[in-house]
Length: 69
Image (cartoon, rainbow, N blue to C red):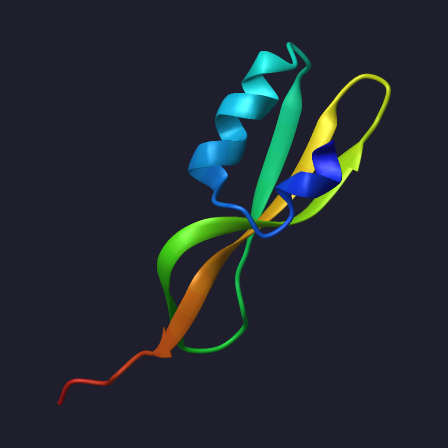
């Protein structure tokens, strides 16, 4: 069931995770460098343990930051 969450929007998955009545943690992955995240957060990794669920989230896309003079 939890593998069906991969690639889905965090807003949708969060409701399902909360209905499990199990503690959960999440981290937001970001690229190195001058990239600005855009778009919705998506679930990219899920790990279910006996006592909790761990999730890794990433933004849908990134744009290069522009420098203003």
